[in-house]
Amino acid sequence: MKNSPLAEKHLALNAKMADFGGWLMPIEYPASGVIAEHTAVRERVGIFDVSHLGKVSVIGEGALEFVNSVFTNDLNRITDGQAQYTLHCNSAGGVIDDLIVYRNSPTDLFLIPNASNTSDVVAALMAVVPTGITITNLHEKFAVIAVQGPKSKSVIESLGLNPAMDYMAFEHIQISGRPAILCRTGYTGEHGYEILPSWSDAGAVWESLVEAIKPYDGLICGLGARDTLRTEMGYPLHGHELTLQITPVQASATWAIGWDKPTFSGAKALTEQREAKLQSKLRALVSQDRGIPRAGMQIKNSSGEVVGEITSGTFSPTLKKGIALALVNPEYKVGDELIVDVRGRDSVSVITKLPLVTSNVR
Image (cartoon, rainbow, N blue to C red):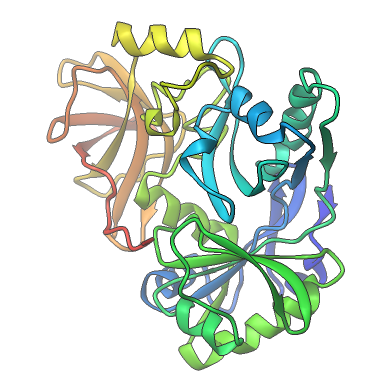
């Protein structure tokens, strides 16, 4: 089990720790708990340690063209100083990972894959990389700290930084006298930022943020709240909504595919899927009773026929109801009622348009 550079700080606060992609990370803090941490982000501000996320550099002449020929989204849609959400698929259209690409220049790209998939992403790129381009796994060279919530702009400004950044833009900055990357990204649906200091500087940057959120009644948040926040927004999580078996076409992530590009990995299979229109679709469900759906639970129609499966399920602290993301047969649309088998008991849910709460990322 690997540790974040901030592990000792979490343990000092008696955080509940758990395995996330081979990394021991905080789920929640006993002084607050998941619901309070979730609410802090929706209403004020919260900070998260997400240093388990991967970091990879792709450098050399032709780096942009190379990465663009592999990942689904089109890096020509953005310019230097911008980041982009994209997918790394295999030839069958299955998702090796979903990740963020930071475009420093056409010869210098910085990737943020998921923790458990970093080595797979690196290996797949290394297998096809042309001569002259260097791929480096920097997983334990940078930390990642997320600052999320309506007061995040004020927190960033209080540290002497420029908060007026476009969504998905990034800058190389100094925070508390230490170099870092500041990006207008996040995974909560709220206005927010992610800060990437070096591994050795992570502790000092973290302490600066802990102090900076205090005037706004901010909280240190665990990955439990991060999960409830992202589920309310309908953001996919690799291993749940995106897998080697669940393609971006099924997961309603086709907006992250540059269909007009000359090529990308999995293009043929995904194009065929899109044209066939036969596969299950990702839908959001909201419970109409006290049932809390969980991943793996079956979904039935009124006749008792199995028509889908929950991919992520939880209690929504905002809606105060059970919510879920699910793969459902394509004939079922927003407004339809379905039944979730919650441990042997039928629980009625309604297919609901995403996001389930208002998005404030921009």
